[in-house]
Image (cartoon, rainbow, N blue to C red; front, side):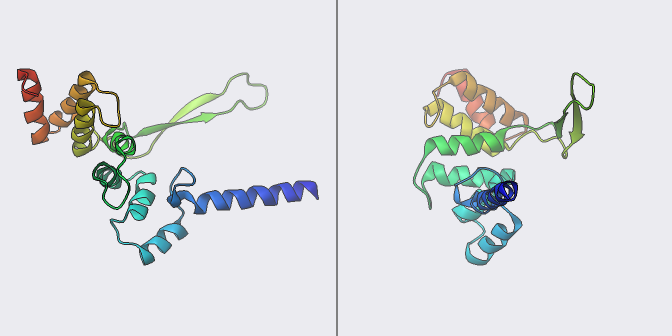
Amino acid sequence: MRRKLGISVLAALTALLSLSGCLGLAPGPCTRETVERLRATEAADSPAMLTCRARGGERDAQYQLARLYDAGEGVAPDAREAARWYKLAAAPSSGQSYYYMAPVGNQSRGWVMPYQTGQPHPGDARAQFALARLYLDGRGVKRSERRARRWLDRAARQGYGPAVILLRELEEGKE
């Protein structure tokens, strides 16, 4: 009886955390039901819908959500939260993740298995540029010209014009 109760409590907590994913109460992507409910009641670019999509790993939604926090549109202005979402959108990915396999039987060690999660992506150039601006201004992050240059360089390598211009200005000492 005690074990059954423990499993029921665990199932209830799991369901609660899944449903609260888009409300900011728990990390992780939203459930399909939550997305459908939001689609019926929210605009596609609403903070709730963008949060749900951003937690699911959509780079464009992460960038759009960061812009909302940066400008304070529909949400309270929060440069730290903007920086967090810009970093997620800006981060390059190798298209590969790793899964740890625990030891089985008499084995003393587990092993790590790589698996493909999609195509490699250099990161969102717009987010890289915006993040560089935050580092230059010291808004939401500790001011760092070195980190700003690194993000600008990544965006410039993708051909993002504003990043190329700002990087050139920094090199000439204008900014």
